[in-house]
Image (cartoon, rainbow, N blue to C red; front, side, top):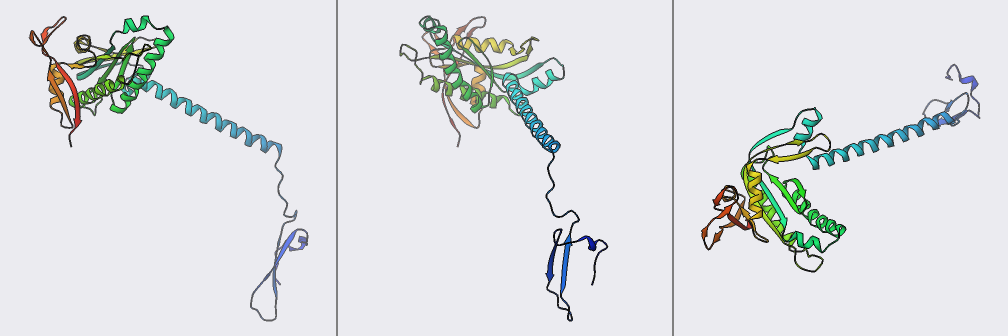
Length: 290
């Protein structure tokens, strides 16, 4: 018979025996295994309970912290480009120069008269409804929303490193045409149709963070003023663009933009404040090249 040194302490109460089906000569083998204190479940002390509970609470708080940090990061990315945020985090000054950016400006036709008939809350609700639609189009067409000032909405395209000047103009023009379609579904409180004017211009700009408290990412340059002039001299529910923007869209290989020269009784071109007479174009529609 074989046994271990501690086999003598095993009893029926602290051990288990199993018959082994072994073919041997005139013998029956039984395997007995046990523990001196018996097979009893170890009690969980109150200290273990506290430790487990504290671990769960800490893990939950850490998860909430990570979620909050990610939400803050996403909010910052909506306020400024990622490259600008990284420079600010390093304590640097945000100044970016871009050779060719397409700027979009729009405003509501007759906004002053509309606002006179509405309460401040009604004005806010109307603008929020309109700009929420525009914000969704910003994500759809991958353009950068610069800012809103009252009834004015400003967008830019062509700043990203992986986006050339033609692609930037394509995205902004497509955004502008989609914006017109969204406005067609809106009505004022009196039931009349809401209308906007749109202007596009392409050219060099300088962009950067301005201010220390609640800094804003602003655009500067003659091209910004030109886009504003295109908007103010445009017509209701039409998109007016400069000759540069027209040439960029004409060179598009992905889309076919239908455009035409703006004509008046006095001839081609219109008078632009500070620029004199300029040739401008209407952007009417577009379709993807198959």
